[in-house]
Image (tube, rainbow, N blue to C red):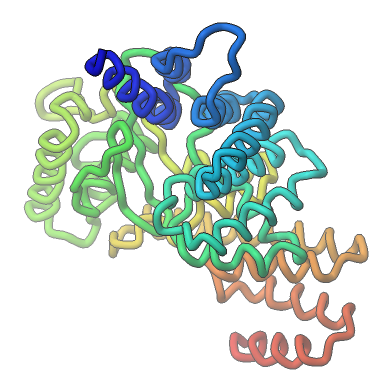
Length: 381
């Protein structure tokens, strides 16, 4: 009897955690299957931990309305059980589901969740959750009514990035490559210890598949002597294969003109490509959640990398400028200021954003802001 009870308790502890793990990797079918490790007889209400996990799975899978229903019940259940930490976590994901469904209730729910996180001093313990909902946090920060309340959450997790928007159910291995403001690779959610050069090699092959080794050398190390560049690429190849898998980078073609590309057994997510998709969709919150700084900041002397740095910086600034200008023309100078300032956090030297922000302050008629923004604008000129 004791052993059976222990098995039940283990299943109850494991089920929601395993479901969330599979959901974070995009394996939704496995996530839903894991939920039923927690045996609940038909007709009885589901425990709040299961509702929380199911709600998170639902918004990841693109069902924000179902997610909001589950997360509302999860919040109520945790509150009734006297578990404020888990209730706050459910509130945060509920706010994200409301954002995804474009609900008018999103701002109030996000403010309530952020206040709970601040009162409970939760950010360090829930960094993964903050990363999951980064897009909605940045959307909230563009609202002047929420900006101050969200400062603590965004400040405690400077590396927030939006989660993948596509699911993955199948035998492929998930490989995430982060290049905007950092150089990091994760395999199935686990960080892999790769050098910046190895990360740059992977990014280069995702963006330019089918290159020869000489072409990769010229892209990454144009200023190195050929032998030194060849040695560096060889080292990066060995490093990636050792830490990720032998077939993560494959070759074809004749021996003296081998062409390199990513292996077919990997579902690769490159943050730069998702950032470009956000730009095309004119989705500034998602673009800001993905952009944490220059492309491959540790790679020096590469014209290819520098070109992408200039491209991403200019396109992000242009989108932010367009959004801020639209708010200004709509008679919302505070929203225009919030938009400019959110972008200036990652790209502080964009003159055009300083100019729009100054215009908004003048439209607002705020002497303090005008003096401050004029001084910061003139410092750049």
